[in-house]
Image (tube, rainbow over all chains, first blue to last red):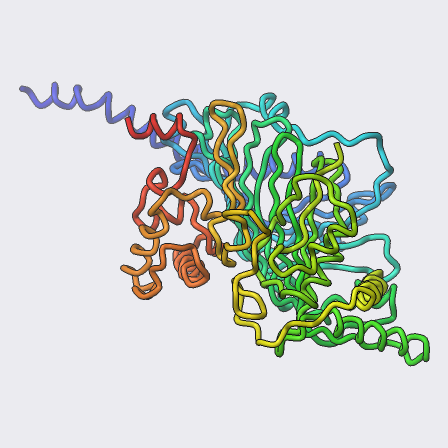
Length: 390
Length: 158
């Protein structure tokens, strides 16, 4: 074949490849500034928040969007966005990556994943006006309105959450840090979930000492929302709850630790579960020198000692608090909880774990005396939850 | 704060009932009572949560009435297929993250700690609980490990 013909045959694909390469370079060059502009626009349009970031980067191969040092600052009513630039952000994320799966795109499905590195979130509890009867959450209806999408995974690495009680004179706050979280299978259509539940698993540290684990599995397409899970917090030093205890009581728990175990199931709008607090080696003291405060502290300390199981190195005050009833209005059963403290102290000690959670439910409603009699029998197990109000 | 009042109330109630104090032995760790025995289940109850240790498999919740309703569970172990924990432990042991002696077949604290260490090394959230990406990085298929609705499991095995 003559050389000129080979040259002609190759020219077209070479030109096409050149144009494609040029296009890729141009798109690559304009994509980041474009994404930066769009992100800034979106943040400027957010009501009640001022948003800022350091850098936005878009990747084409393995499609993704990265944002670095994202800040969201709350703008109080009546203030301008420019006035709050120096305020502490409600949300700060060192680095966030949103990725889209190529493979799924080829199957005309959108599957996304989100990774947040070192996010710091402040949640301030504000008192809201009481509304009418609460409705159980119905996610399925909301999900049907959203485009068919599966968020395959949300990850948090090294996160921090600060829960704040806004209105109290002494600002009470609970700090959860070193938070590692994986949420998966968050689909917007049952068909995309492959018959598996959405799950959230997390591990973190409460305050300086509490070891926190959380697991939740949920069926977001059930109406109302069905879910099940458990939470445990172990070894939180009671002294860390100073801000919660002292303002109202002028007492402080100077020694001891607190474990909390909770297990819950919500199905068809009905909640079943239990919470087991275990207070170990607690010592109570006054924070003020007044005679009344000292007497109150002495009484509280003695009461703790008597209610404890008096096992050396443990001295635990423990009980199980049954939760039963409607998801929107659960019945927190205090009488079995009170009997549980007695049983732990005088009959049989409660373990520091998920055993007996949720507590068994009585076949039919029992009177207070019958419950008390059963609570002091060794072979009866822990006090039973009472059937929910019909 | 109501707890001192509550504890005082309890104290009075206990005194009135004249309960005898029975604890003598030390705490033998989680899963047992202060007397070293498992907490007793209520009379006539079988399979009660009382005989579950701290790392129990977790209650499996009956799926809803929808044909494709997924299984739910209160703990991560409740969503695993039989033998899935052994498969995870085997992989962890083969990588040196879990001692062979610790292959208990249960998602117990040593296994959770080994999983956490593995996740940390692989730049995954160190939750200590198995998830799809963790089992994939261990060289396992999520379909072999996690339960799904019967309908979807049948489709997967076809």
